[in-house]
Length: 278
Image (cartoon, rainbow, N blue to C red; front, side, top):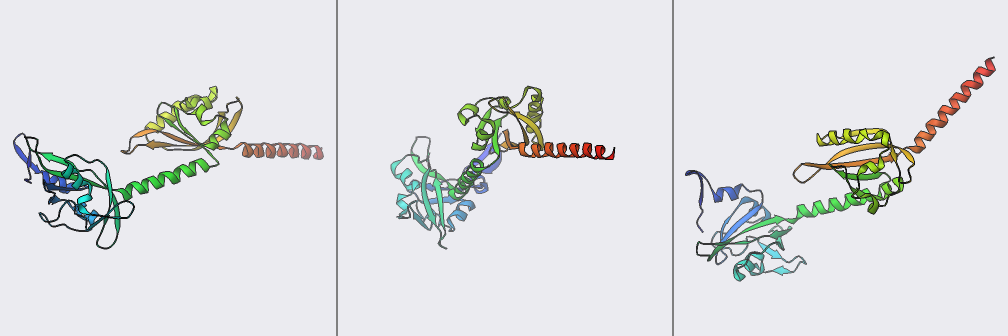
């Protein structure tokens, strides 16, 4: 397969091989018969093996396995299926076995390459290391478990102030079920005389600030007020854009009640002392 040169305005820029070599994901190409014509360093790293150009066929892995651990022949791999059946294969999964015995689960995305007449002349395949996704999935599961088991109310909202998540502790503290709270404005929790806080919070979150813990008052479903300690942090998407905020609310009613009792005792003691002096 010929390597083409990309041009802009007639000025040579960079070859497609150079571009693919620079990619951080594994990429390789084959001819119509499946013989490997190119692979980048990321592919060699994933395989733990360097296939022989024009000799190794279908995939550069030393050995392959199905996800259940059974051996997979190279002519069963997603690239072979794409070329033999002349169709793109999206998201085929397999396990690459390296010469050192390490197993690397991956997803493959082979796409057919055609000439101007529409005839298949080869294919290009992108391999995604599923270990990264698995770690992210595991982390997400652990985080969800932590949020649900937390004794503190944890609530998230978008930049319009609409509630997007609500844990069990939030229901216990504020009285709303998830079905009642999610999709409604977070101002249902804010007393009228504290509504100016929300504009301040949104402004600081949009600026990427984490708001340190502070004490304030929030309102339950039944209208009663509860003193809370709030900590607020921005929520970002996969490319770093701020898309909302996470709030952790801790009920400090017991703490406030203890303060009240201490003040009452001090006041009584002061009165008693003054009385005894007289």
